[in-house]
Length: 76
Image 1: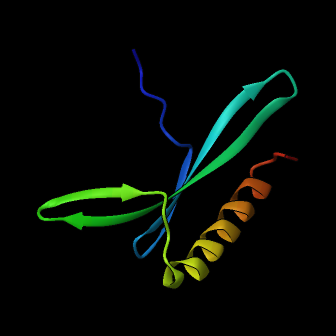
Image 2: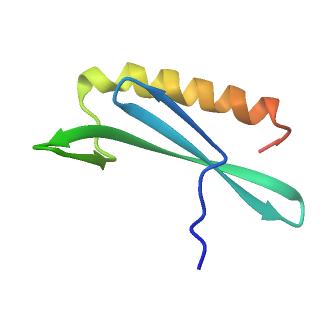
């Protein structure tokens, strides 16, 4: 079994976007997942919950993800 990896990741501070490529009959389509990374003791974890101070960074990471997808030929 192979684990699918994102085709690209964007990280600003503790906010990360993972860009995934899915092949379709119409060509590749991209989806994006967002995570906030945090440390719990010695272990790094992630969550999909964002606080007030994270939201503008999430917006910037989303903008950069959109730019990357547009530059790599998808029209979704």
